[in-house]
Image (cartoon, rainbow, N blue to C red; front, side, top):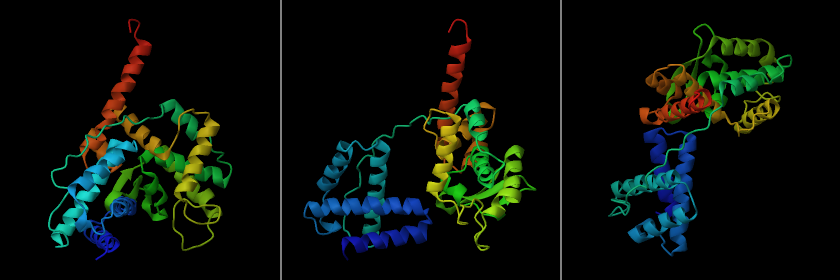
Length: 297
């Protein structure tokens, strides 16, 4: 088998056996194609010809390109899974990735919006127009649920349960979860379904919740434009993104006394360790409030 055939076989395996999200699968493929290209440049015609030194040089080059530690760690994890697969399939005798330490990850503290900034952002859309109602529903939904961008654009009309006050979304690894949604946000969504969305419908078969002017489901790029437009008009100086609203959702919940486990469930985190980053954000915000307010600070 050629290198590309090995990669295709591994991708088929993780799609069928692991049920990984499309973005994750695409990242795996990119990492493996870069690894194959590196080996070919070193005159290795197959993965069987790759040596441990090749891997060490490859990882060192990744670091020299100033890639983040988390990115280098992800690439090594991809190669570990791939080479272990080839060994299991009898395509390789030895696993050159064994016993190579992962770089220690650095945990960046996510940037969030203040509650006042969120209010300013939510107030921007002109709800007297269909586009304004739609944009308001998008912003309210993001902040009220903490959904990822891909989860929001993947929402269908039937995923919103107005009676129960919740939305159903498909997260990473195709895992479904139900997220409660605040009454205020629910009211905005209800208004969009009644007065906004019907004006966008061009194809009866498209049941996407958020539609474009052409009647298609909103894309990532379209969502990005909605956020950037609102951020510009609200005069928020931060680089506002859908993920920043997700961070703000979690941080504001935690500051309001929400249980960390509950936040983990709502965010769809597989591990509580991922959710714990928001405790650092909350502490940092508390310290800033203290410094501003205490007379002896």
